[in-house]
Image (cartoon, rainbow, N blue to C red; front, side, top):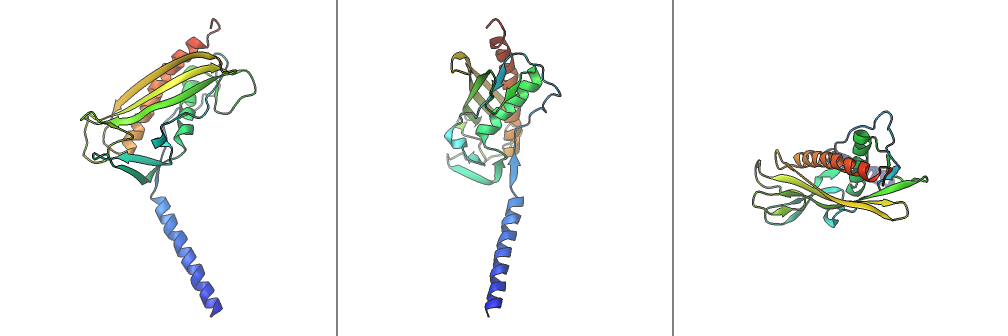
Length: 211
């Protein structure tokens, strides 16, 4: 009787694991597109440390968050970020800066002389045709070419001792091909790339020897 009970218990545990694995395989993980690191970065100034970004509280979760047309917040278990957004965003920006402008970046606190680039995500949303701002994007409804994914980020450049060098707010938006998580991530990847291009020019100006 004891051995039979043990067998049944083990069978129950194994079946639970199988169900969990099957459910896990249905999860889609999203990440921002970014260029690969250049073979050899050409230093254009001091090393730029890009720590974790400050993001809205609604984005501080692994799941993609949906907001329907009635204003109800839905947490989508089947769509998740491959890394926390407060880490994924600065990592993506750092890779763009290195690839586009040869700026030496790091997401780990350096020991040598450096400057700090602080990123604050003010908005990361979809603006619906009716003009209502969405926390992430609006799920119900079909394809609507007038819906756009918007990204607003404030950048603050400081010396390692906290002295302010400069600050700048950048805004980008891009039309959504469809109202889906994949389209949203694609549009925000493009926004991050365009924003990083403008940011690289601003950094080179503020990191020039005359500054």
